Length: 162
Image (cartoon, rainbow, N blue to C red):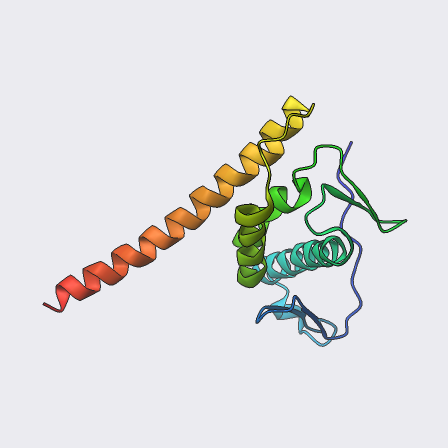
């Protein structure tokens, strides 16, 4: 089946705040000239739409079920069938890639302080492998690569100044 396109957003300026210093702004496109409708601007619009959908979903999860496995969006209830904060862990890499730094750090703090892996309980091997192990490994690898590149660039600049 083909993928459905994302619904068009209104053309008004919107800011979505995540409680930190990040905001997602989608600016009006109705006044853009035909020459500015290049593939690059269309890609930027797609990226902005994707990020906005993610932020909206993350805000709902954060408000109603932070640290639980899943949000039930209609009832605003929580589901805990693995009891490991599946959505939070699964979203770590997306938070990082999208530049939502304070939300990423808050989620990492939750993992460090609240994730319990020593329970004697039946869990889905598949879900715990792809969502928990995969989420933790990808977040670690992404953040490690960023911190090592920034520390190596700072060490090379300090050694160059000697």
